[in-house]
View 1 (tube, one colour):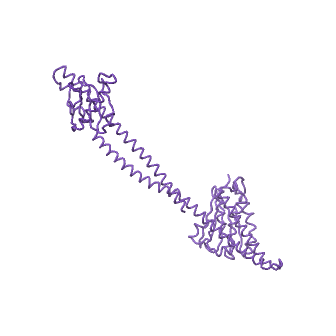
View 2: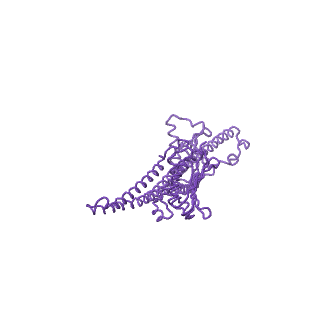
View 3: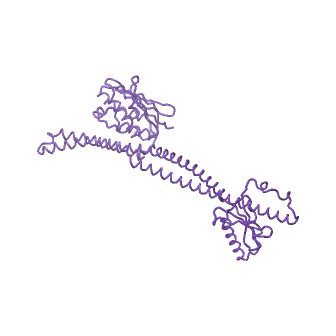
Length: 439
């Protein structure tokens, strides 16, 4: 069972790793998408502020006074997407960029100095590339975002001068980190759920494998045990024969006969094991011919009349005529022979064994009934398991291996039918085979 446990752990680990990678990718994509959207929103907001400030300055210059109808307060313009910002404009004296407008954003002297230096550098590069005039429309740039992860800016013109609108991203970054933490918590719970689900599904998927593995181990152990007994007897008989090298065959006939008997038992056991192995490998004879089940049951049951007489039993047949099925005659005859052999072995002396065949809708019901020692109720579910015997000592004395009923069930299933057993004090023991009729 250790390889199966290892396989289970590998399945769980593989599923969990795949899901965690998928969740991490989704988390990263959502975070980057949220950040990109937030930066784009900040750019749109600052661009709108820059356009409004330029329009307002031009109108004020033309009229000589501010117009309250044209210039509503900032808070009324942008209530939903508000970003505090400062405006850096070019000084007429020394050409440096200084803070000209502050909108709810307080910068430290150090940050102001660093931003002035960087903006002066950006403006100088624009001049070097022959861009003598500031841009007509607000332009976004991420140079500042790279240099100072806490700030974002747009540039444009206001009153004929180049200006930079700079906003702080501290609140945005904090919101994004909170958003990432919330997503991480959700995905962590999802990962735990997936782990539990993977564990459950791995257990469910491996349960049939574990059962098959256990059955295979038990099958090998039981087969080895059954083969060990006749081999031991054969070797013992051969050892006795070797100890009498001058004896005649007639004098040692008992040991030779014992060897032959055990060899035949081994042959029967290996044939049954081979039959079950073929059934497991789906190499059963195909159900290719339509045959008369009524005739088959009658011809198979009649030879058992003499055996029933020897055991002081009577064999009764109740067979409905003209019932046909599609299947293999040899294996169906083997099925009935197994059931009859068991019924005659364990029937009480002086009783009757009955074989019935009748129609039930679209199925044929074949039953073999006897009266004898009852099968315990707890043994009925395992009755068709390989090497299972209710009374091992009695079965061994009768020459049984515990494979007959398993073969019978295999044959019934191969023909699209089923087999069941019932054993009560009132009705005795009956084995019933259900087979689909051929239309």
